[in-house]
Image: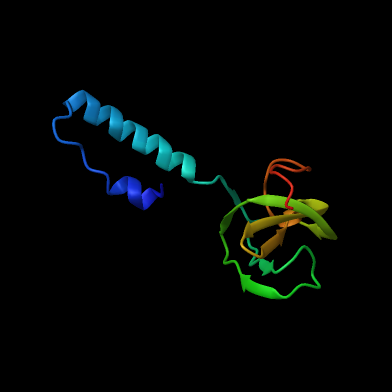
Amino acid sequence: MSVEEFEGVEAREGATEAEGAAGAETVGVAAETLAAKRYPVAPGVRLNVRSGPGTNYRIVRVLPYGASVPINCQMPGEWIRGPYGTSNIWDNIGNGEFVSDAYIYTGSDGYVAIRCN
């Protein structure tokens, strides 16, 4: 069920106020669970988003200053030196969209998400 579907759920007829409040709380928790954790891009950086884990892949878009991204999965790729060190970890932030982990503040030098297939 999507967040939009949760927002459209109405109280069933005959439900008590307590049942309605409990249902609303459940919807809130479920919607929060659907929201992925986001990680900030290094300050002052407009980051290239590439179609694969390396600079030899085409640029599909550029993230604006102050952006934050979800990390769906991570995979090894080209070694990149950035504000947060040197890393060969690339973060998948969307379908066919990768950024170097050296530009994303995750609080870790290693993997923080599952490996991409």
